[in-house]
Image 1: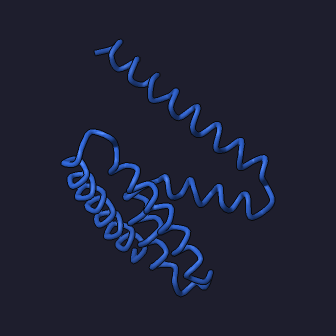
Image 2: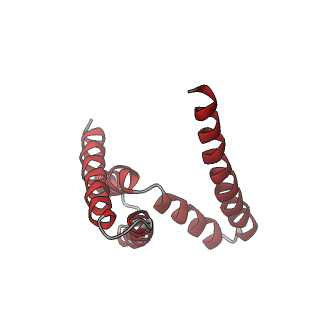
Image 3: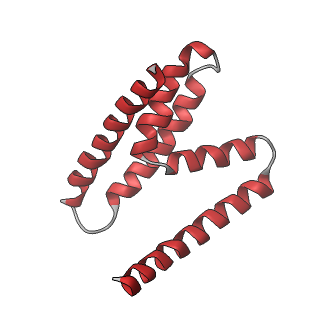
Length: 122
């Protein structure tokens, strides 16, 4: 039950952080600076925090708060970056490249497909 509570708290803070950062950057201009900042800062944070805490069980609630809760609602792009990092660190360079290409190409394609279908059915 404690893990669920810390994940909820982290999620709330991550979502609010994303909201306030987006509101701030939206006032600057129409380029998606907020999303870029959030994705890049999330990647930095997950890389830093993932290596800051040992794999010890006693930090599990803190890891759930930070990784699943806060960064999970702040940005999933950070998880994407960490997964690529881990694949490359384990010598799985080809798998990392395939993951990058498939995620980006299929992800963008699915955004267009979803948009097309929504227009078609609305």
